[in-house]
Image (tube, rainbow, N blue to C red; front, top):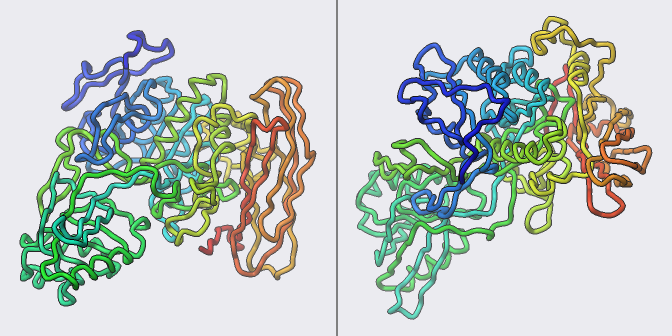
Length: 607
């Protein structure tokens, strides 16, 4: 794909030379690089993380991309026609908040449209968080900041970047699986079975016509001493719940030809690597293997690697590692906002950077691409969609772009059932895990209605959070805002959160009232009716129940009253408000969460 040689007139960035990087490496695609550090001076990526995330957001088309033959095909970013500017603020030695702040500020000054930042700061208040401070300045310029939620799972510390004026992105699994075929028996035998199991073993190997062994003394596959005495064979390993330890043990010996690992449900295993020639099958499939071994005088097996299967698994689902809301910094605003693909994402990697381990110490390089997981990978998917929306609708604000992605997000998976949470035993996912749902780029292009927000509304939210004037000014870096109308309920956000004190006697009722304003960005004339799915045990009233628009960009306000009480258990419940256009073309959905809060203001989650 070619790009106009003339850069956008608003662009003020530079291509900063440094160690292993000269300005000639910039072009009409990569239009700017800068670095922020007192030490090594170069914007060159030495780890791979920045290369992976930037190519996910806006990488050009690349034919023949793959990870050692897995996921082979044409790779491209979400917004392949977008230009890229890179700002390096993290270094091999670590990071400094001042570098992050300086890098984001410079991006704003250079004239970027979207900032994608796959990192965050845990355990710091908003007025000490460089992402919060810098993104406020970006928001004032209508630059959307898209950020990662963190990788601490449902039982770790809550998400980071739970900032009202940024888009916080959770990670999901999608329907691409990397597999190997296990053949039990050979074509000379009456009985032959082919089992497709999971694997990501990187070598172009075919373990062929090897003896299969199932030995109770060895089958835990956790003892180097015992495994080193086994004959050359494909060994069957029992499901001990410690798959990584088993792979490490198998990789530590040289006498085994391969291994068969077992899980009750392999689709629920986070299989990030495979350092030995192994395949993961189910316990039901294991029974077939063992029956064959016991019935044969000379049990033979084979494993063929480097295969990819798509659209077989039910997807999407919430990734087990993605951090959960609510935001510890701003619990009154539902976070995360949306979910995007984050698990085993194929994207560009640094030259000569190792991407796989085989055996104990053989490092391999996959020729420019890598498969890695994290909310760092989900964030640039959302950033790329935001860039496309900015291209299609240059007049939209940062809040309108975020709103379009949230209100059109999906809550159902490919089986038309509620999206499941990988980290919570495949129970239905809550908005505290996936936000409004899985982003739907095509629908976001035409959302019907959007929720806009002004800088003063964000400041009014800050004013309700008991910050001092100096703390608020640390975030805003301005004295032009006031606290005349402080409120945690009326920020024009496309979601609703209401809290109760779980220590209050069951039966005591609370009422929260919200005001929202929606802007018609669809047809010139439109009419919408509201549909409410209240959380369990909660009453939700909306008025008016019908919104009529006579022209494009016309605004209408509505009010929501949520009445609820403590259930005495501290449980989280959730529902939704959906505005449905009478023509059926648009549905504009906002999630509702009712959650407990302690008297100190911190949110409790029972999962």
